[in-house]
Image 1: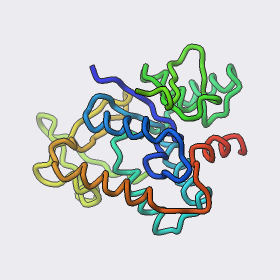
Image 2 (image 1 turned 180 degrees about the horizontal axis):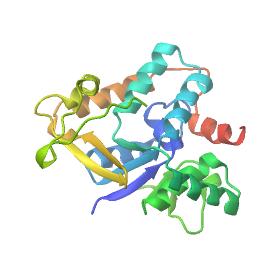
Image 3 (image 1 turned 180 degrees about the vertical axis):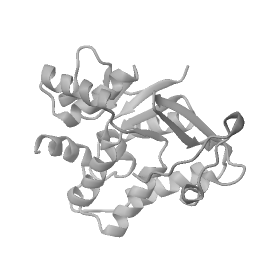
Image 4 (image 1 turned 135 degrees about the vertical axis):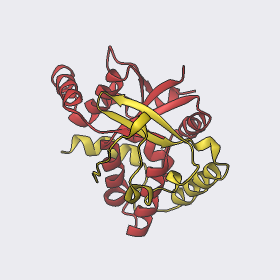
Length: 140
Length: 87
């Protein structure tokens, strides 16, 4: 059975930006494994907004460059999952029980719901004792 | 989100509305797609990419191109982590 992974925005963004990014090799390996159908990748819809914001407000790319990046983002082999009432409740519980931001928790909630593994480059804020989370640097 | 309704016909046949087909090259005639069950009320349709020999080289080429853009800061992974804490 193909392994399901949830990708944090901190991982996906490396497929669009290599300026001062670390852990590009494992990020590219993830993409390669997705292409070869060894894994299936999901992310909350939130990832699109966070990455759009990082490219335009953070990196301050020109509008045509942001649009080019977003076109690639929408072509990536990732299934973006909209938040449902159920997922929002799971997220709210995680925020309350583990003092996470709602943003960090939404990725964990989807991971729990799909019984998947979260891959993140933001392990400091997304560790959880019962949900499977691996740091991008450890992905192989 | 753009929402367009359609009816499922006999034997589960569903015509993807033209306004949606027009937006995605991979919804053209004879293109293979895969269905994924996401939840009880959500199914996704994605291109079956391996059938298109030109798709992946094109995507890799586009990734290489957009990665070459230089902006006022990099390390966007860190930006995203900090951004979540700043709201």
